[in-house]
Amino acid sequence: MKKSVYLQLSAMMFLEFFVWGAWYVTVGNYMTRLGMSDLVYWAYAVGPIGAIVSPFFLGMVADKFFSTEKLLAALHLMGAVAIFLAPSAAESDDAVLFILLLLVHMLCYMPTVGLANALAFHHMTEQEKYFPVIRVFGTIGWIVAGVVVSGLLEADETSLPLRVAGIAGLVMGVYALTLPRTPPSPRKEIGVRQILGLDALASLKSPSFVVFILSSFLICIPLSAYYAYAPVYVNANAIVNPAFKMTFGQMSEVLFIVLMPVFFRFLGFKWMLLTGMFAWVLRYVLFALAAPASVVWMIMGGIVLHGICYDFFFVAGQIYVDKISTREIRGQAQGFLVLTTYGAGMFVGAQVSGWLYNSIVTSTGPDAAAQWQMFWSIPAVLGAVILIVFGLFFKNGRTAVGPPAHTT
Image (cartoon, rainbow, N blue to C red; front, side, top):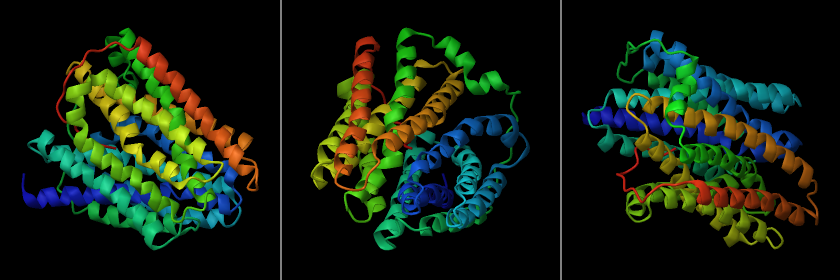
């Protein structure tokens, strides 16, 4: 692989996730400042909608008719305009238009994640060797975005992160036109059944796979609570630059993705997945215990656990699905997992966590600490129930595997 191509693809990944990381963590605090705290969950529901629509767009339209780099450019440019205009709607008290503009942005953005991966794979000769190193620049881009908008600009409660995301999207759109030419690849007709992964589901209908899929879907409910409300919680506890503090979770993710092969040798799939689920429970227990006295080390500990929470369950789960799938259904199986988790699971999770927040956290005064404690206790209990059920019914040996293909 040429060094110039390696650098191009690494920069592409950096910009790709800088766009997302620039606004995703701060938008809850921004909406809270504008009096839209009861609608925060909708800002985190638009991504799952994009994740549900994206496979249909990519599988049935996009990569049949357009070169990847041009489509990547067009989608980023359109998405950049939408998110750049979103603050104008919010500050004009038009909450519906604000959410709709975020939706337009994510409908444009979510397909670009798959397109960026596809473009990178197309220009690699040794995917297992190069892709993890290139993809980690995406996580670095997310971290740098948080450092810029929160650590340097201290703009967590302002419109600036959305504007930064818009500018970064424009930069990414223009940069995409300089990427190596990647023409649409000829392929057999793909229908709704293949995109939904129904053939894969029929082939993988073992009891353990069903338990895994249901657990993955359910664990996305507490995951949604973390993404939507952890930054709000950090801010409510007067911890400065909350979005910057949240990047500690991505830093942890980078560390644990490197260590995963070592843990796989000793734990195998089942205990890797159980460890990830236990980390979810522990995170919310720490958040709940920290609430009455605003214990900073507990809150930060819960954030740092993100590396184990995400890598040991979601990344390990992607590897598990890959290992149990045949070559013919591997792509469908991964697509079905994405639709189940990032799509349906995260959408339901956003609705449930939004309902819980609006029902429980109703005060900013002396009662707020007890309300936050109750709020975090519920996903802790839910995670514990999922953990127990998964441990009892999921059957798998101590299979050792190689290093994971990528992080998210």
